[in-house]
Each structure stands twice: as structure tokens, then as C-alpha cells.
Image (cartoon, rainbow, N blue to C red; front, side, top):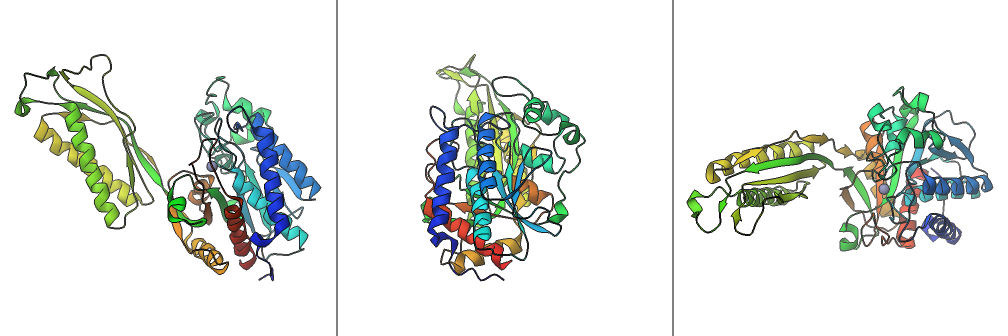
Length: 424
Ligand SMILES: [Zn+2]
């Protein structure tokens, strides 16, 4: 237990350091419209090199792992378990400055404060600067964190860049990753040594703004079940001549299905379940669709996300059984693709409670939310590392140049993390 009298969010010099790092990296990685820090590419390297230079000035110890992620700490060699704080440096093309970077700057500030005040925490702190979290560049997400645990497949490494067609393996090699090691699919980090992993991240949804919460503790990261292509087949026909009872209209059948699933969503939510549903693709055949034609076939996608596997399983069952009912009632036929499943990741309950305690003791709200978006933290959690996350209020969403995080809100998240580490 460390006696750190002044809460970190009230330390002016820490806030000034935060503003400096954010604006310097923004300046370095700005493109015409927003911020571009390409995964294993130029902008990401500019941000990382800036941080390495600053870490040298601060006399931090700097390491690079075999996936070219960077680790900062205050001691040359750490033998004991340690607290790991981190997030990703890359951004989507023409994205915002805070997605990912906020979690890295937070870790940097924690180290700077410990160094300045010569505080020794019961467990040492390492800051992890991850690469390649955004799937926008190579169609694969969490590349740097997956590599840590030997989870990158040859297929992943062969994935190609969105515009140049170059392979990910080539970009990783150019960034200094050791591909001969990565290709062995063995862990390059000892997960047993990580006492706890904490990621601070801007919220990418609207809840914290809506509730007027500066920060919130994340309970878990939603998994998803995805159907990319479900086909509903009916009978095409003249829109004026066929009475309702003889129609096999695929659009009406699909719309009926979505309405039924929306009712189930509402019921599950009213009973306290965590769920979001989306049908982001829903269309008739462009080659033969017409105002006066009863649509004979539609194609649609269906995605469910939840923190709870049993909710996802139940939803999948409901989807199938509603289709059977609609087939009987409307004379249509549904054809399913294979469902692609991505498991939810739970934040560690004890870590969540400790983060809530830290937040409350600093006078902030004791509130929690689920994460709808995927984060590096999910990789750590699913590898059995005790994991926690703090969200920062962020107006205007994310993955766009307008994302807006207030520095005062950010400082509250850093202060909460600092308290958590000092009390650990
Ligand atoms: Zn992110």
C-alpha cells in the first residue's frame, strides 16, 4: 500500500504531459482528414518511435518483443509477476487520435508518476505498446496481441493489405518482427507472469455520454455469432395479380423474421440480458428487382452480440425456430450458411470490483458497462490472464476523425488506474 497523497487527476504536470503526447503524436500521424497509423506501417512506427524517444528522455527501460510490440518499464529486469498496462498504437485509415493511444498514454503517465515520486508499488508495472489491433488494414484484428500468445496462423500472416495487396508477413518483417519465431505459433510472452492486464480505452458507443459518466469499468467484451449470408426463397410474381393468401413474398417473410427477433431482443433485455442484434445486409436481387415484382428471393446477414454464450446460443435457437414458423405461414424457405462464432471475453470479477472501488474512492461514479467492440484485452482474458478495462467517455463515436475525448475524463481514468495499482 503506497501513500500517494495527491490523486493523479489533480497533478497538473501529469495532465500537461498527457496533452503534449497526444498532440505530438496527432501532429506526426495526421493525414488529410484524420489520423492514419497503419498497422505495421508508417504512422504506427512514427507514433512508436516518438514514444521510444520520450521514454529514453524519461530514463525508462525499453524492450521490443518478437512481434515488434514495445514494452516500457522502470527496471531492467523484472523477475516477479507484474502489472501490465497497454493498448494499441495503430488506427483505422483517417481515424481519430484517441482510439488505442489513450491506453498507451495512460500507462506512460503511470510510469512517469512512479518515477518522479520514487514510488515502489508492490508489483512492478510494465507498459505494452501493441501493434496491429485494427482489422481495417489487413482484415485481421489484434495482430500484435495474438502474436504474443502464438495465435497467428499462416493464413493470418498471408493476409493482404487493403490497397497494396502486400502480405502482412512482409510488413511485420519490415517493422522488426521475428517471423521465424512468430511462424512457430508458440507464445512469446509468459502469461503466468502477468498478474493482471489493464487496458484503458475510449468508449466507442454512446452510453457514457448518454448517462453523463466520465468513466466506467468494463464488465466484459461481447462475443458474436454471425451469419454472413442467409437466403430466403419465395416465389416471384406480378405485384397486382396475386392475392395475399397465394403469395410467397421473401421480403415480407424476412421483415417478419426481423420483427420477431426484435421482440425476442426486447424480452431478453427486459429480463436483464445483454444483447445487440443487427442485420446489416438485407437486399433483393439487383438484377431482377422491380417495383411491380413480388420478390422471389432475399439475402441478408444476421449478427448477435452478447457477453453471455448462453444468450447467443438461445438466440441462435430462436432464429432457427422462427424461420421454421415463417416457412409454414408464408410458404417460403430459409437457407442458412454456417454460423461463425467468436467467444465473449469476461473481465475478471475481482479486478472489476477493485477498479470500481478505486473509481468510487476518488469520488467518481461506481458504474460499469459491457464493451460492444473487440479489444486486445479480450485476447488476454481468453488466454487466462486476469483482465480489466476502463472506458472513457467519448463523443462522436470512434473510427472517425471527430472522436472527442475530454482530457479531464481521460485523467480520471488514469487516476483510477493509478489508485488500483497502488492499492494492489
Ligand atoms: Zn481500439
